[in-house]
Length: 129
Image (cartoon, one colour):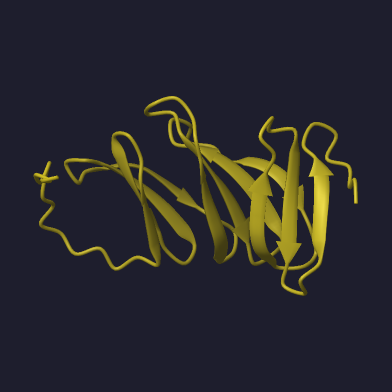
């Protein structure tokens, strides 16, 4: 199997993490997330309240994918790449270590810095266990 380069970006990206979606690159920095098209131009940017601790790519239709973002201050957001506003899901008092969402997208599991796991119902934002 042979691969051929689709496009080359002659830029230096000094980011902590990055994701490749259908038509975009997502660059994760300390407190901001940048959305670039495949030509390397900045399309959107989200500035978060605190340092980003965890990001998980969530599937979606092409050019409408999403991400779960956990912050050091305990906030969890859902970000769709076609929307300029992050959607708050959960606010805890402890820093986030990991976040995941159920297959039917009705529950969210959060692991904090102290290895405690919490499961929330997204609609009611109630703690299940």
